[in-house]
Image (cartoon, rainbow, N blue to C red):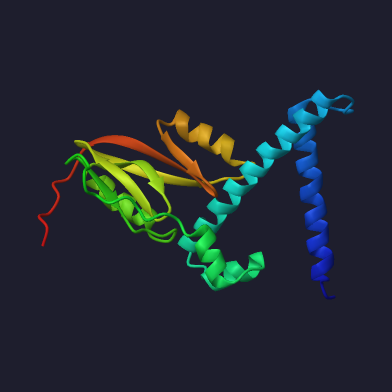
Length: 196
C-alpha cells in the first residue's frame, strides 16, 4: 500500500486549520460575529495566533538545527532556498562571556545531543542554568552540585513537569520542544580543575 503524500499533507493542513479555528473561536468568545467589534476581536485573535505560530516556527527551526538538520533540508521543507532559510531563521549568536559576573559563564555552543551531558558535568562543579537559547546555556556558580533535566513538550508533559516540581525540581524555562528544569542536590560542589 502506498501513501499519497499530497493527500496526507492536505489532511494535516485541514486538521491544523480546524484546530486553529477552534482556538480562535474559544479565545475570542465570538460564536457568531455580528458587529464590527466582533470582527475586530477575531482579527486581533488571528494576529495573536499568527505571532505564536511565527515564534513556534522559529523555535522548531532552531531545535532542528541543534539536532544537526542542515539548512538545505530546512529550506527544502519550507519551500525556500538554503540561503533564504538561513537568512530568515539563523539565530543570533550566543551571548559572549564578556561583562558577566565572575560567578557566571556561557556554556556552549551545545547541541541537542550534548547539552544534557555538558550540564551534568557543569552541575558537579556547582554551575546551574539560569537562561538558555539556541546552542547555549548561561550558568551561575553556587557552592552545591546541581542536576538538570529536559522534558519534551507534549500533552503529557504538564503533568510530568508538575511531578518533577513536587520532587524539588525548578523550571528554568521552555523552548519548543523542551522544558528545562534544575534541582539543587545539597551536595558540596566539586573543586574545578585549573584550566590547562
